[in-house]
Image (tube, rainbow, N blue to C red; front, side, top):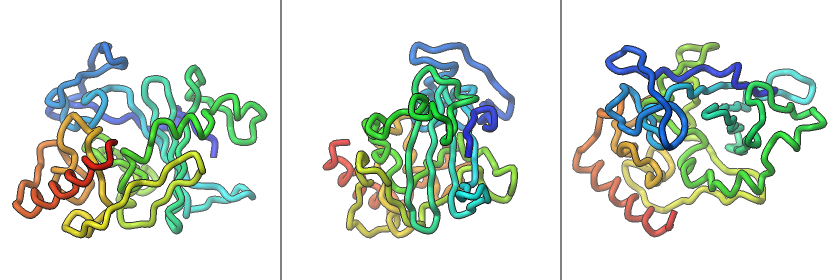
Length: 240
């Protein structure tokens, strides 16, 4: 499909249910670093940021017909456009992003002669080590992004829940997500997920499973604390 941030849905930024706005920050973008400044903060980067958008596309077969086994999720922030493509049946996943300075509302399509001049090469995208955050599944779920529903089927989230499905990353430039043999209440539901990069609040302490409603609904039961700590100890050995 042809991706465009013009098709994406803006993630609401509210406080006590009322839309809020923020001025520019030293980190770039309009927002706040304080997760208490909005109802549904992001887990990393600016905790409360306005203008972020998420889009969803079904895959297409070579004849142009829809391929419902493939989904693409776009993320638009600070003028950029990142895309994750995922095939449900096999778990095959790809990460790609437009180059800085490209128009995120009209990037080159795959059949455009200028396509390679508008999108980062796989080797450049792989340098971001996407798999270190997208470890348990292709798509990250936070109270911020889980506000959005699929406009074509409002019974489901805009960003799919794929924690129980197969997952691998295609492209020789990319490493595969880390895995562990630890068996506990966390890994019985999804693959292991390290959270060192989610600094705004303890994403792994939210009451499972997603969708997540807010960033203060924590599970501090004894078994959850012990099982989370086992994963955290393992994560420390990875030097992420």
